[in-house]
Amino acid sequence: MERPESKIRIIDATLDLLCRSGLSGVAINQVVAASTAPKGSIYHFFPGGKLELASVALKEAERGEGQWFRGIFDQRESIAQKVELLFTSAANLLEESEFMKGCPVAAVALDLDRDSEGLRPVCRAIFTTWQNIIAAGLDEVPERDRARVAEFILAALEGALILSRTEATKEPLLRAGKMLAEILGGKYRAVAPEVSAPPG
Image (cartoon, rainbow, N blue to C red):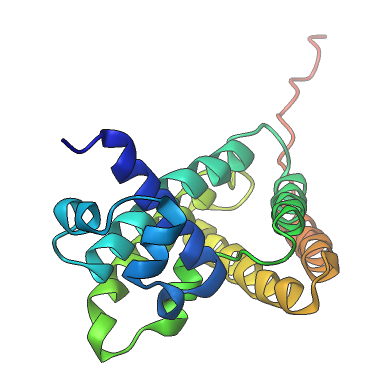
């Protein structure tokens, strides 16, 4: 009888491979080796094969990284502080992976072809979820602009991740975070509460 832990190991191994190599770097035999799960168990849990497995792993990334975004943007800090924290945290995580692991959703999106087109809406939905989490934490930004600003933040983060991974240094992420924090912090300042004049 299959143990539930096998399925978890398979998903975790697939997600790790997506982070490292994108969709083109994920093969069933690689997942078997990385997860130490029997090959038959992969097709038992994921009869749709590689694409179904990738979709499930991406949704796990949506949940996990969504918690990461929420942990930053739910804080009672200024937009500048949140943005700088986001990029610094991403830089530290990338360094911990020895610059070998990037965003799995971006990696899959860059690998899409006719055979994997079904993953496009999955990637699009995940990016939208993350943008919504970011937008919900942009307290200083007028509500009508929050979606656009959140998209800008996420786009800058994904681009800086690629540069930092390519150069094997945190600096592109740290520089991008600092500059973006300065730009958004200067444009959107917290509104101080009105103070009533003393009676008299």
